[in-house]
Length: 297
Image (cartoon, rainbow, N blue to C red):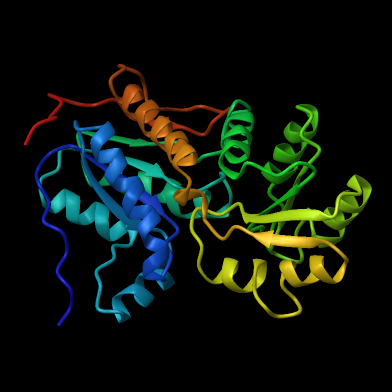
């Protein structure tokens, strides 16, 4: 028997769209973010959907319910939802944003909602980089002289410049103790680049942490695994004393506040009469609300 989908009301809805994670304990961070969005934006019904079909199938194999984003939008349309906003939890405007979220917005427009809107990922405008950096440093509270290595996912297909930008902002603001890398070995900044920076800093203690929304396999194996190929093991083999903080970004309250700010910004855009458009700086795209805005129900 398939698990039942959530009951939907015919009221305007914000979809928290994530790549997804199959480990139940890691999904708690997404659930917490959705709960906080519901409190911050009572005008909306909040639902969750994933952009990874593979992750959805893994969750369903556990006997749990999970929506792929297109399925979710179709269900909202069938439930009579008048307007829908999609707020991504993705870190960047990378491949997943372009290949999954932008088509989802087009689907939402075709389904005939009175209003549709797509929000920004966490790192969009240049102001987002110092905001994330400060949230991370305030969350981790490094010991004196301790170095912070943050590891994003990276891509085997194309280089995403956001990691270079975040490193440049950290350096420009005098945070030479922060070092950005990616787990994907064919992308950069790679292990060799981070190791070179750490050796130049000449400090023995390192805090290793994910630049990922949730934990899961990437953190347990590639970042902090016991195997010789993990970043933890390789840094220890290079002579550093390493501790790992396995919490994903979604488990850090200060970072969740940044996501809430993105959702509030998206809501503010929907209240302004404006033509269909795309902001070249941020990638935000919206259509005006048509007809009477429905916020109750």
